[in-house]
Length: 430
Image (cartoon, rainbow, N blue to C red):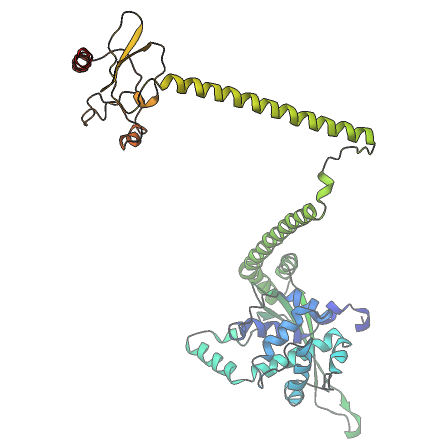
């Protein structure tokens, strides 16, 4: 099958440069510190259709390559910076001609017209240039001194078969896991000008991505395990025992994340729709624009207001009359005086006021609240134990349970009442 018949995604997955770029971000992610959190599929999509993810990849790499980037606020500034930094180093980090040369702003249009494979080669060259910096060499040295395996920076294949196919496995929880197959062919061409001698052999590499998800890993592992080739069977067994559980865990993690994102999107869509179209849920009444209906509603409103006003005045009059009658009744008693309440057979209560005449009132007289008996203040200077309005003891009375007044008077209180009556009688006789 010729390359023009393949879609851009298949063309990218047939390039070993893509596997090299993914491995670079996997190995040096702690040094780049960009927190890209991009999967291999997202990087492929960005190479096919340039977007913000592709810009983030280049900017993260260019920050570690001197000199510092200028004009970072301009749109697509990273394309111009990439062209300027690759121009003097292209021959050492890539092969062939440089497809992105600085042209005073025209390189932005040139990059947009490039095919995905060429964009991949440019990204691979930037990774190579970033790997030549001193901080990368120090990072590798420090990691090896700390006991990190060399396989973190130099991948090793997981096996090969009789046909010469080499299998590679790489990835992490962010990029994803992938299985590659490499085919190496050696071609010998005879040199007929020198009596049949062979020329220098030519090596041809063919790269293929054979597994990118859980289903493909399961399929390829079962296929290799059932192979008659002992080497392929061993590779299949290793895939099933060591690699397949890791891929399954990543698959479940991504499914949960996808469901959570779908749920959040549904909630957000529902919230936006409720804000965007709030009137659809309202119940509308039929509107009439006749003047007769308008006058009728105005008259009804006026009548309703008048009736409410009459009711308010009536309740206010009743309340005023009740207050006046209560004031007239209570005016016969001085609320600041001490009271006695001796027994009376005629159904009346005789109230003796200290320093004043005796007052006889009906037994149905509703004495004010200030006349109620207070047991708490019996030990004070008030011998009768009644609360007085305006005194400090009034606040204490509010915290206790009210005591109902009765006609019962203790012996000490009766003696005190007789004493006051005798004094008043002596005064009148004089």
